[in-house]
Length: 488
Image (cartoon, rainbow, N blue to C red):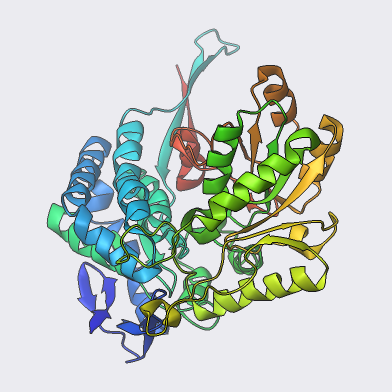
């Protein structure tokens, strides 16, 4: 049986409380690991180790040397890609293709790209006139924010954890990572690679546990944590923000979404189906950027629904060890119950169930009967104020609504508390600019989905987040800026 210990000050160690919890396989429903739960003493040790590292070799290391070390770290992740992939798929139930092509390579890229970028980024310079005619020079200096609390989710654990740790370390900070209790493996494994490439002790720390009254809450309340970055659901973000208010600590949040896709009649239908198949069903719908609302222009509505139905019914369900599996299980029994509650609610509200709506029927004795699988599901026929259309479900499902005019679909797409992303499918460049510019979201894709240039700003609007990260925009959160005014 695998055991995931805490990683504090460069060493793996058992929780001082002696408490552990079970990690359950999403694919089989069976226990696959014991995980040590960090409580007060452990969290304090991790934060103190991170704070001490800021005063040690890491804090004194030149920026170029620090970034070179992170490049070496990225190479080491690439060299152990198969090991990281195995840890990820066993924790999450993801198909191997998704982990191999997306999650692990992006994890390495998050260190490599931010190290390259930050190595060559300087501060602003302004010359100003003075009354005596000699002038003054204003230099912008960047310094690390300090200890960063990183709270990462279970839906793409390695990718989303390193998306925060990469720029944090490139900027010279130290981190205490609290991965989701559902996905402890890759964050734990990364500690071994940190040691392997020579990252100083205390720079990267990992604590396991839950949120309230456990590792998560203890981390966000710790007075020596200088900033908190979090990806997860909106309600948790609100709770963290209240805790961060004590001491006026900075926060950066990427939260929930109820993202629209808009399909115009002039769209390339093959492309539209390919894009929405991924945006609705990739990672079993457990993607913050996924599309649970689809709006289709009326002349092509019936064709689109028919073809998306055929695509959904052609998906093959299975865990990472099922050959040819294209869609995996949900992360946990609890999350499956949440998704199934929306499936029931949709039926009770009179939705037209185009396909799915329940639990798949596997042969007797099939290992998948113990896993947390649900059917890919498509609905039509519900009003825009329905909870199915308004609330984030986070499963492999979508509601499809017809529309007639640009004005109508823009109003429907924006009629939500969320504002993370939108997808527009059209061959009309003018329409893409016109409609895209009116989306109240942080990111709009046109004729694509899930393309991410890490140099660009990323984040949500409304209840989908606070702040922007990515490229030089990460400097806004991961550093403090000082203006040095020099009288000449």
